[in-house]
Image (cartoon, rainbow, N blue to C red):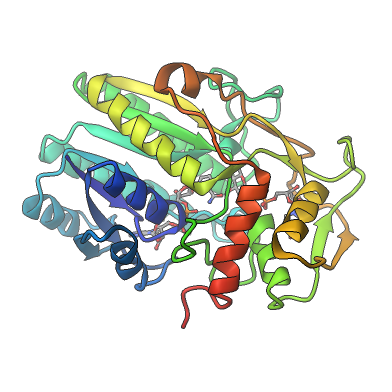
Length: 338
Ligand code: NAD
Ligand code: UFG
């Protein structure tokens, strides 16, 4: 089976490419490198020993996408391409709506033209509304979202749901990721934010490797056991495996199905720092800073549905997440930049 990965050079897409190749799928990648490195395709070939047809295109460009479908008989698509920085989306919302929604519409329209009926979409736990109770379950209320980024995910979920209602042969799996961290164990691919990282794990990694002086812990007065924010961190290789299970499900069903991909367990910022210190063998300098605007105290998944229906669950714990993040960061102190 041939699978198109839009945004397949990015952090989650590249790890999914490896899992799919190892599961015997042929993977085709379309990416414009707006948030990834041109080095990724060769690293993927090095890991898997397989070649990955690569198209450097804007996924919103329908003619460019048609070329990909003309040249390959694509059975399914996994749609990772999009902008993902929550804070940036507040500053430039139109650019987020334009890129995230345009890429989705173009992909769905071109898939329809070519009779390609299976889609997996990267959504986010950020779609759960303020009123949703912990742990987040797929049938809970969504919205209002805390950022334009979150709204793009919720709108796209709606677009996909409407499309599957209109085309009864179409099958879509929406995956709501919790907090992906870690890296492939070889240290050849990993998370490489272009600027100063917004997210906890890449920030800790850069402090650990000496590229940044000190981690700011955003608040220690939350109503959580140690006062710091609690999230459901998931190893990116476990997450990648979830896509293989989702594809298998999509191929056998029709309609839209939504799954949380999370561990179902919360970890605090201080617990993560302590686990990372064990992994890298030295202290991580940190200081308590004010709360970050828009953050909530705690969230984690109810991960039962993915286990019951897809047979998928996380396998790697926090020490493996930190070990693999550190392995990637220490082998690539400047990310993909040589
Ligand atoms: P990423 O930025 O590393 O990967 C996204 C890829 O899409 C990049 O390689 C980028 O160059 C590409 N891209 C963006 N716009 C494009 C366009 N118009 N045409 C072609 N390529 C384009 O992000 P990621 O962490 O791998 O996330 C993948 C998906 O998962 C995104 O949709 C993101 O919103 C979603 N997600 C990520 C997280 C997370 O914490 N990483 C959490 C929840 C959901
Ligand atoms: N944190 C710090 N210091 C930092 C960065 C983060 O203390 O430098 C704390 C945050 O306050 C929070 C926790 O670490 O308590 C996790 O923060 P992240 O920024 O790593 O992750 P978020 O949960 O805020 O958001 C992430 C993605 C979103 C996605 C959401 C749910 O960035 O895109 O998970 O999937 F929507």
